[in-house]
Length: 466
Image (cartoon, rainbow, N blue to C red):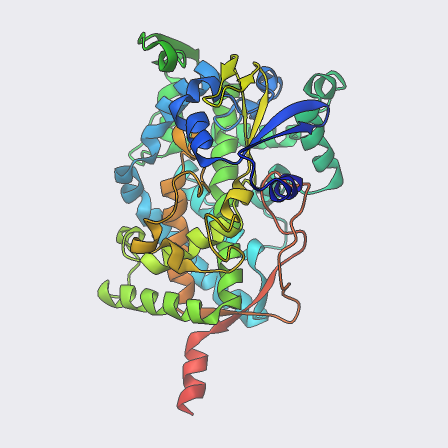
């Protein structure tokens, strides 16, 4: 959280110059300049960071890491997978996962009511993404004597260790030296696993798209052509309408596969665990959320349906407030692809790293009064309209906004309904009073396990009647 400390020290400054390792960087606190970078003049800032090195690893060729023409063509061709209609059509798979989630809760609760909330939610979201995106049964919510291979891969992608932390920062600061010495950000086992997974699913579908219309079907459609076509990134600057062809090879497809799996489960699992952590500490808010869930289930005859994404405003507000307090990415990084001059007159050179301090924006008392307090009401209809644009950006913003945002919302809300149907959460004796973050992670993660107590609601009601 070094960036946050810098922002607090220079809280009145819209722009702050700093060094990231040995390289100069610019921290942008002014929401109007954030708007320029992410939306108005996005072309100049379309790169994530260390752009010239994204081809060095198969995994970093995916939509999250890449930039320019490759990013734009991929984005245009992958976006159709995440329309509202597609989400509605695959919700029956999410519903199936919520039933397995309920059974898993019962089984784990019978052993001990105190559970590691992130591990629990990751098992649920991993099953969701496996079923919806790849059409496979991950069985992460079932108990086996041997370690689950999907959970092993998830741990490898989002490993938190001193070695991974060193690699993250070394690659970002000195990419040329990092790759010259033979380092990689991600281990080769991940590529091998997902290559085998895709081939297995391809063979089961006889290399032909099915009626599922999932990620694998989209990949099979792309695989049938040697190239995919989309708009050049330069059109954003010149408006020429130039088209670009992108070669479709196995490395490209496997890279997107790893991204969908990793981002599809981890970001939602983390957000769900932080939401439950805050609700365990704020019982009044939890009672409101449970009451809303009960009303929803009563209206729908006890069934969880796709309409839950629109009919649970308070529960959704709880997830938004958790994302404000604990954004998945504490800082969004951009890299200039051409020289650029800000409206302030400040000239920025090509290759400059620009940091948008999401965590600091979310915790700025000017944007969110009493910023450390969990207040879901901030995100209810009338109050949400008061939030200043570009101060709340948990999924990113502009053209690089998270492509899977609808999917994340769908699986999170369905999972919370399934949980609160029978359970409520409380803090355990070892639940931390506040979260300390692990500095070695790719995304925002707690340094230690967060245990919560899962209490069966009908047991409480029986006690009240007695």
